[in-house]
Amino acid sequence: FTLPDSDVRLGNSVFYSSGISTLTFGKNTVIKATGIGVFEKVASLTVDVSLSNYYKADQNAVYTKDGASLIFLVPKSSVVTFTVPASVRHIEDGAFSANPYIISVDFATGSALESIGYASFACNRKHRRT
Image (cartoon, rainbow, N blue to C red; front, side, top):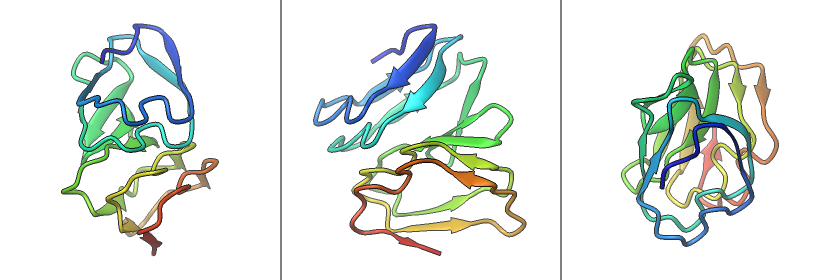
């Protein structure tokens, strides 16, 4: 699925059980909002931000280019623990929500975290926050 080359709002459960396997960001795609469970019941997802002017992917997560905001963690069965990098100041709404694999979310030493968005950890039964 390729996101439009414009402002985008990813609503609650937008890709629920959709079978989506790849999400591609356009050059000028801008995520304006993310809902709860955007990728609920998505088995595994590859995200391509290679053309994006605004986002980067690292550690199976999508961030703003400057690394200050974590947009969402990509659901993958191989990612059960995740460390939020020290550069992240804001975790966006729904960033970890309904991710069936994540068990542990940690924060890097020297964390600059200032805020965690609405429902960032909603609908996660397995995780523990440290």
